Length: 105
View 1: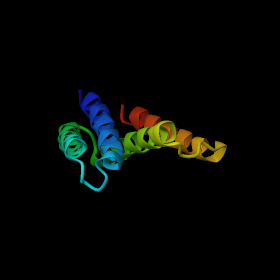
View 2: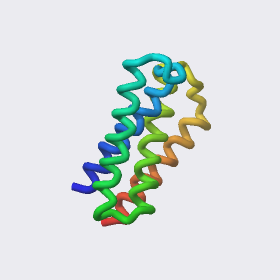
View 3: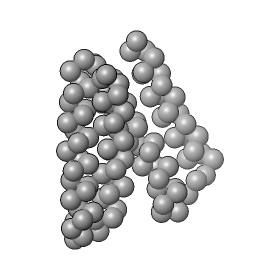
View 4: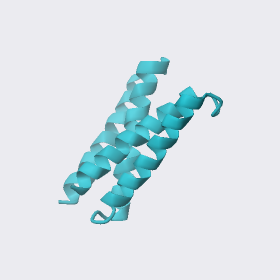
């Protein structure tokens, strides 16, 4: 169950990272509230996951999921560059996440 919590925590991290763009410096109420909710949910789920997972593994996977998801959504939503080097580096992060997942079993 810890990996489910950790995955959900990572997804909420993507939500708050992307949400920050839509808050426009926390000047827009609804995006600001949704972003804050995502922040809290992300940290709470990370905390639940860390009850049984090693902190280094949990934190690295959490930030990795957030990094990959945010980078890909930045490309899709905001027209950020999708160069081969950038996508290759994102792929390396995914390999690192998978490596930590399978090293933990």
